[in-house]
Amino acid sequence: MPAVYVSGISKSFETVSALQNISLDVEDREFLVVLGPSGCGKSTLLRCLAGLEYPDTGEIFIGDTCVYSAGSGIALSPRERQIGMVFQNYALYPHMTVWENVAFGLRMRKASRSDVERKVRNALQMVDLEGFEARRPRTLSGGQRQRVALARTLVTEPSVLLFDEPLSNLDPKLRVGLRTQLKQIHERTGATSIFVTHDQNEAMILGDRIAVIQNGCIAQVDEPQRLYHYPVNVDVAVFTGNPHTNVIPGQIHKTPEQVLLIPEADPYCFVGLPDSFSRLAGAEVTLTCRPEDVELVAQPSEDEGTLEIITSIPDGGRSFVHLRIGDAPRQIVAVAGARDVSGLHRRAKAGIRVVRGNIFEKATGLEVDSFGHPALPARSAVSIADR
Ligand code: ADP
Ligand code: MG
Image 1 (spheres, rainbow, N blue to C red):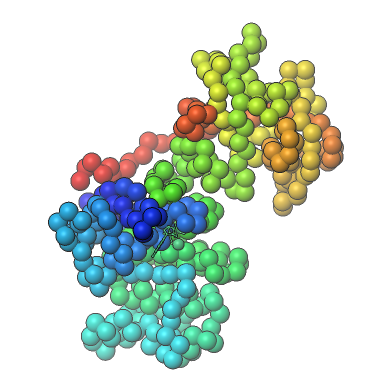
Image 2 (image 1 turned 90 degrees about the vertical axis):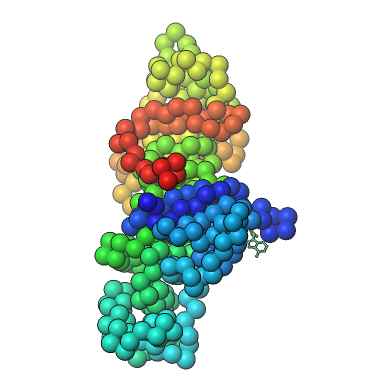
């Protein structure tokens, strides 16, 4: 049985439709990341799970308890749901010490003194804040405060943890540190977690699975690798780019020798495709490919198109090479090793070879086929229909 089960929930605010018919199941002990751009409905979904917002339609189960059902009028309050929530803005009580902040929830529940003692100590140890018991929030850094907020949530041992962009207000180094800590805490406690973010990098690192939300709808729910290699539509491909996804609309052509994509933006830069794509000859499609899937060819042969280099941006041991395709601002970005770019300068011509890519139907943006990607093991997903 899934730890959290959401079926057909929709939520509108006056004229804004924030969630549309969302169904989702989260397995026991799973870390599910909800990923999407700002305004797509992520917080609304979490607030519905927490009981801070009531959906217009659908139902929500936490464990085997129905906590909300529009049809039968069930609507448990936040307190009656076994959940803990950590927000972007850590609302700690400023006049209380770290210890008192963490103990607060337990005291409200009239836990015994020895229970409070043991659980608070345990929670502070989990977030690495032993020795900070007597400090007040204003004497702590942002990262430490967020760890107090996390301890305060963990201490009540909720069966489901909800996180609403808890790392977004932290500077990048702290963010990475706390992210790693969160992952370790999840491994230790095994608490089912739903973590909302707009940062695809964070999503890829934390998530057992990632649910991508676009305009209030779930576009795709998959393991990080599958999402990265097999996005279901162009928008998901673009949103999961790190830092960039090449999007090349064009038409598939078959010549006696090869199968090509002729880009709309620049018909002289054709992209070779595997022979199996000959069946799509004539189709209007969109090719997406990640920079690391584009190889630069310094001396292209007759049957490889050429592009002009705009710039090359070093990134550690490699470089992102930007090539012009048609009119600005259209570009293709390729990754090259340090040695490969030494002979390439601005305005030089280079060919490209796309070694991995995804082909989408141009009219609908939906995936048609892909090439070069690794075969991933079949999913062992619990489907909603199993319930
Ligand atoms: P996200 O967390 O992904 O940035 P939200 O769930 O906060 O997105 O918002 C989704 C949409 O619903 C947005 O268009 C937002 O303006 C709208 N919205 C959210 N809460 C309210 C509210 N209380 N009243 C009116 N509109 C709201
Ligand atoms: Mg939000």
